[in-house]
Image (tube, rainbow, N blue to C red; front, side, top):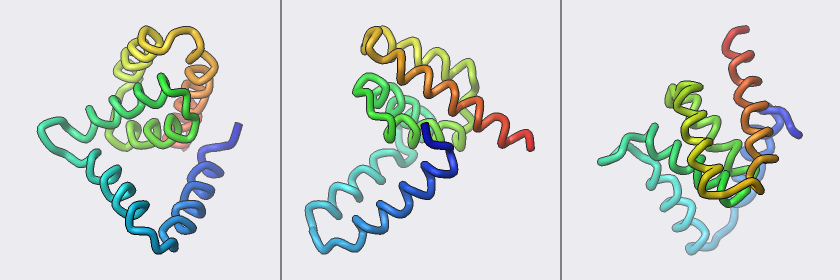
Length: 116
């Protein structure tokens, strides 16, 4: 499993690669994705929790990592995270368990970084 820093660097590198493409459809999709998570009737915090749950159910490690980082930025508590993960497990079933393990490992890593 990659570290949080490795994930961030790799995501940034790959996003720059994509941003350099001259494809209107790709640019529009990225813009839509970015704008969907902005504050609205639902808070950004709520939207990131929803994104995290969906990512767990879909079993996308990159998406899980991204939304977990965003949840931390939005001050999601460990208790809120645990309840969200419980919903993801109910919806996604036991096949999500390996992803839940990685999620909690990364959450602990982020907690340690905040205490340094």
